[in-house]
Length: 232
Image 1 (spheres, helix red, strand yellow):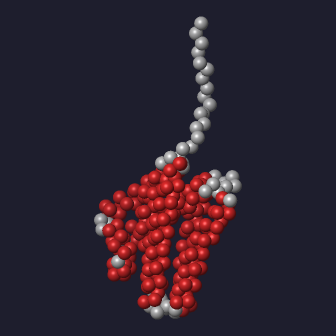
Image 2 (cartoon, rainbow, N blue to C red; image 1 turned 60 degrees about the horizontal axis):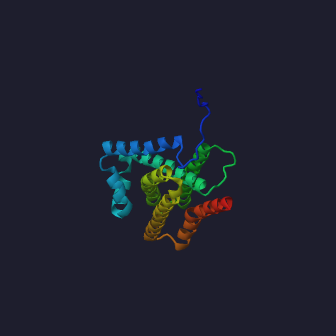
């Protein structure tokens, strides 16, 4: 007597060993396309991006030549928003912050919106200060430096986010800490460079630290506090 094993069409549910989701792949593909496009059409753009980050003279030259490569800058700005949003989303996921029934992709879009809103408000405040003070006060260079560092952060986040997403979850904290250290160091470097630039144009020290505390440090402190509270 032959007994046939019973078959079923029901899906087999397996535990998720990675943080990867289907919608994350296009994010990484966009980064590759942006790098490939830039290297093909602006061969020295990435090298200049790196040089301008560490050399103030190269930075000021890049500001003068900014209108020559707007498309390459736009691609890297979008890349920063996508990967910084992914970094925030994965931070919420790793620290088990509840989404309240909101789909993960929608949470990711909210994170991107938060990144874009933060820098829109920052730029709006800078423009308002220049208008009310009827002067530049080195803010044009500072604003360019903010966007410049953001583009570099986006490139640094590409490999770390890829590893964090596709490696096993038990290794996720390692790559999350690496990404956090990179972002923290680049933001700190941006703040120090901004202070030096402001001092060179004789901006009062009180206004420098007031701006840094309210628009550079406070948003991250509030964000970290909210995540810690939700996690606890």
